[in-house]
Length: 380
Image (cartoon, rainbow, N blue to C red):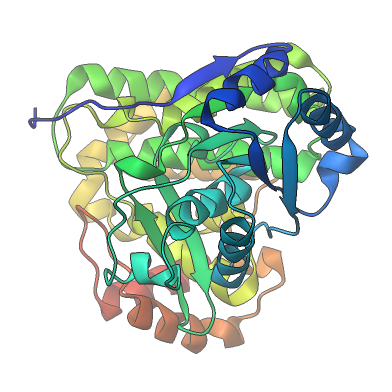
């Protein structure tokens, strides 16, 4: 087991009707709110009116920034930060899924400085303060509600970058599973795949820790048991509750206790597909993961077999484990080949160039250009 430090300052409010505590939670931070949200689904669901009416009744002033994309871009982060700076906001309220919360994290550290937000990503700038961030989650997937990490695309630089520091943890996050009842089937499936992939990134990281391995397996098995049930009954609150909790636990730190790092090579490779072809994040992971496992099977065979045996409750070889994992992704409606997302084989060279430019790599399984080529050929 590796040495580790456990730290998570986010206060999580989980369950039915927890949003009634939102205004009183915001008030200690101030009354001038910057509200960030996405493409308007919160208006269709009625959540927007619910939040706005509650805040107005309690004396808050709200400045809005809408239109955060499912694969968020740095231009929107800069624009939202400028808006918050101009209005002297006290607190940021992010209402949406991981893309909105990720964007809000960078906005929170960008508002206090007169610099481009990308300066944090390329190491030119380190934040020393942040506007407090409160999140209301509407999509169970990324775990962004209880971790400090944010991923944003910079198309000018040709990079999808990641940033996180202790200042970018949300102060509070509100998770009412009822707010996810309107999420469509495909994005529900992508969220299930995303939380499983987060667990896999920990599993294939650095450090032997049997108790944490059992936690990883338990989270994945929860998703594999209740994910298909949810996809057959999208309005079932109990199933939404279980998947939402699993998604948070998959990336709030507990799967990393006793490890010095995760791998994250699959996420790194998947970001290229999202950057170039706007592939939904969860879909990019189900495309890349089986290919990555097959490519590294000779080096990770025992570890892959151990995972498959634990997940499927029967002795499996590494090859059998990979086939079972791929079949599960396919069974919940996720793509396992890039062609299933409408991207043809002619894209191969552009993907390879982008992987080289982005320096795609894992924390444990290191990759070079020849690895990229083999992995691409396995998922095309």
